[in-house]
Image (cartoon, rainbow, N blue to C red; front, side, top):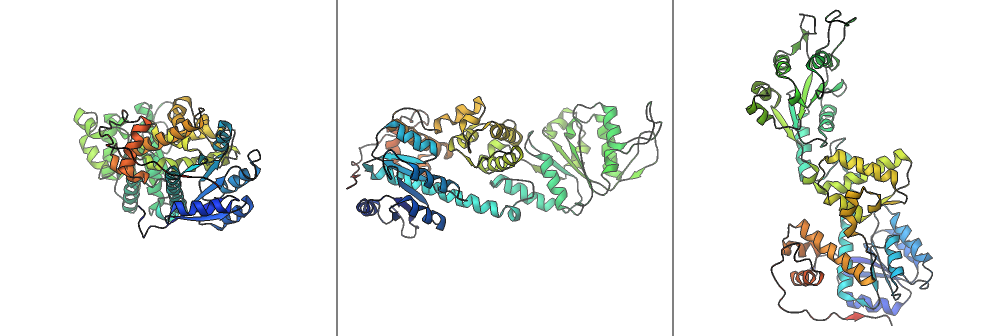
Length: 479
């Protein structure tokens, strides 16, 4: 039941039959504001005026064989900054008509006569999608103010990271950034540097991976002429290059014990010596370390000095893996889409729901770096103006196949769509049926009925059965 203080959903109803519009307005009730227009040309003006939540379009206008006007309206809708979902309906029971509409970007499609309850369910879901799209658009506009430069994400986990970055940026203390590979540890280190008083000084990044101990020492501290065979001239190390600024030491746990001792001394005395020299060089460098390993376990195993661990971990920032912040996947995907579309000269403007559902279902062992690579690959290979599951690698496209329209009969297309909506809500709510019903904006009884009808109870351990059938749903027929 609609609450009195709940704003009504503004539905742009496009149909030349005024009597049908009046009938539909009555049966939908006060929760919906039906703005009916008689042609797609008039509908275009309403779209650009703003405030439309959903478009309900007679796909038979001007006839069941000519959909040119409908396609133009659909294109106009998709080019808006925030595109309202378009729902189509038709008397044409052929499967090809419904599939063509879905391929063109229609969000849902119905056969006449319209089933009121099914239509309300679809309108409510489309309205929820529009609300989220508007929120996302508003978030993008404020991102430069509300977020840390260079970092993307609106999840609570990232909010905590942003807050920590702001707190530590202005202090001189050594920082330890931990997180799995690909979570963006260097991006965070650069953000701290940019927000610090040292922003105008150098930022120097160094990783100890796969380098022999002798080369690491030379890279970090430099050498004097004649320090070893082949040292024909003096060379400054990374610490000296970063004077006045910030040095980022990635994979700090890979340092040999002898180098750990030397680094500890540098951090304590704020000076170092080049190879082949006994003259100390004063050090004015902010040190940020990073690791994808458990340094606490390394201390217990004796492969990391405890005193060094205490020295580098005065302030700690832990980055969450992407699988724990899936709410950030859409905004990250859109950012990478815009970046790579511009870089590769591709005219790609949108992302299909199947594409996003596949990304949300993946575990992302490579985290944000893996997502970035997947999106770039998809942009390069895409032929259309929207990224679809066909543009994903095979192992990912299978995850999104369930969310795309099937190739079966029309009723099976609708059934598949409902099944995926219910399963998505249950996944989102960890199997809690009451919360899932609230997410879908339906009653819990109706959710139970859908679970039984759509045969999804085995997947989510549905152990409660509906006691009685609900009353038949009245149909609305065009005059």
